[in-house]
Amino acid sequence: MRAGKPLYELGNHRKGGAINFIPSFPIYIRWYLLDMVEGLLDGVKYGEVVLIKYPPSYVPEFTILHIAEYAKSRGIPVIIDDNFDAFPIIVSHLEALGISFDLNSIYVVKTGGNINVGNLIAKIKYHPDPRVYLKEYRETMKRVSLKFKECITISIGIESVLSRLTTPQELYLAIFEIQKALENKNRKSVYLVNGKIFNALPSIARVELSRIASTIVNTKPYPTGAHLYILKSSNPELVGKEITVEVGGKQ
Amino acid sequence: MKFGLLWEVIRDKKFGETVIVENQASLGIEALLLSLIEYSRANNTPLLIEDILDTFPIYARHLELILGNLNLGNSRILKIGGSDDIGKIAEKLKFETDLRVYLSRYKKAFYSISPNENFIDLVFGLDRLFALNDTPMGTSELINSIKTYITNKNRLAFYFFELDLMESLSTSPMPLIEELATSVIRITQDRDTIVFTMIKDSWALKAKMKEVRISIRDILGG
Image (cartoon, rainbow over all chains, first blue to last red; front, top):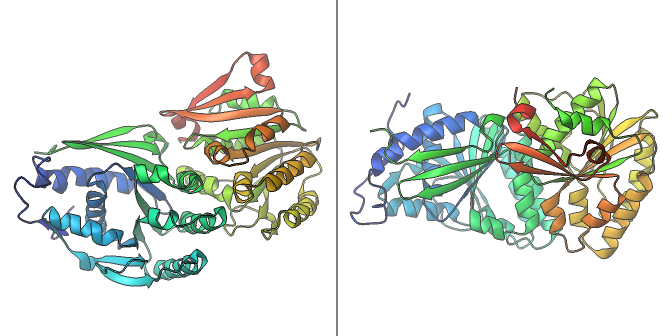
């Protein structure tokens, strides 16, 4: 099943450091969560838009790690849709946790920001008029879709894009771009947003993202694991279900 | 009996009525849309789907993902703006930012494609239109235009709204829209169950029931 070298390896993480709250950290991320993520991601269909909300935690870091690992085991390319330097921040958190991460295998489409990490395949310069960079974004994503047949995209920092848009007209320009992913049968699109930041977004953005998403997962970490609450899913069996991920479950 | 009492609620409606659907559930509109598509097929009633700014495709794409495919055989679509052409497009209008121009073009298109026999009309995306015209003038023009269509005697209309979006608007148009309706149905979610609450509804009066609850698995599952 999991042939080949893992994408990332645990280095000498600091004793007494930030990750001490997870007693069996390596097992936690290497096996148990991985199985969970595999199961969930297999259930996500091509053409879906997945919205994952999280409280302050390492949920985005681990989610990106596991999607990358999952995709590698399936031979599917991962593209990070990095808005305003959200990805370099995530990578630096992983480094602080002592996790080295094979960044060359991660493709990055960058909008705004200036710190380049990963395998940069396109860069969209921020422009004060959102019509300019949203048009460029649309054309870039079209090109990217043609280049890769099937792929998983992970969008991060989308709140920085949305919170800069002030009028309903501007917000809808961005919303229509996000909605386009539902037409693309070769792509699984994942959006990672901090729940509190999500709630503070302009209501048009909040309601429309929730409406467009075909899967919405609320994550609630606790000291030794995480609850995943599935609010919306393309699998009706899963809606309203809570899945608990225990730390070191597979010893 | 997959749709249970929900079909009873729909069957009770007469042509000429207007139903306002206020959604707050994660898959509420998808569930009601599927019930209406199947209902219209079972009863040989044509469906007209009015899709403003690609709003209908959101729900239709979700149903495609959930069911594997979606049969829109007995429906024709009037598309206003947007680019995701799903289903049989009978007529396509360019979106006009000038509301007056938009409304007059819409009127012409609506009468040219609406069926002569009784039909069910599903209207998607008015919430986006209200959000884009959230001024006292814009809101009252939109509401006035809805008024001119609801007296049509061979049309049973369902207007779909995301309630949280409508309630965030500064002009608060929802109570005004509710006033126009013969029926107001609110959809909420209780874990894995979709709850259809009749805020104002003739079926609810007769049946002495305020709500219909159906599990998401039953209504959308295989």
